[in-house]
Length: 171
Image (cartoon, rainbow, N blue to C red):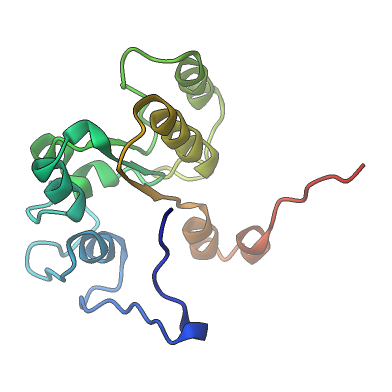
């Protein structure tokens, strides 16, 4: 039931229009529908002044029916959870969607025990499992999930890890 936009094989292009060519401005544009080269000009942890589609949905409908999960620790500010009220879980923060399920309690414990190779990006498995637990608990109408490993592997020029696909053992 989800959607993926941008498939050059089908002549469906998604091009950014901001002049920054780095993360926060790009995610701002993706989530708001427009570039803002004046207010969003760095990757600094500044609350986004722009209203995302997630915030619009939350205001129009129900705040508990929309959430955002990101591996990068700046998504809290991009989504501007403090203003928008959109539940956001990103970076190395634990789940605070109380009361916690046993799965969320375990994820919170593992999060403290399993290091990430990056200082600002948690492993995507945590992002995925936190989002999955939220979906099971709340059945949201709209959820945004942003993984980060491929981006960071590419920045590290670790193309083997960037292209690595998990193998499923056969019996």
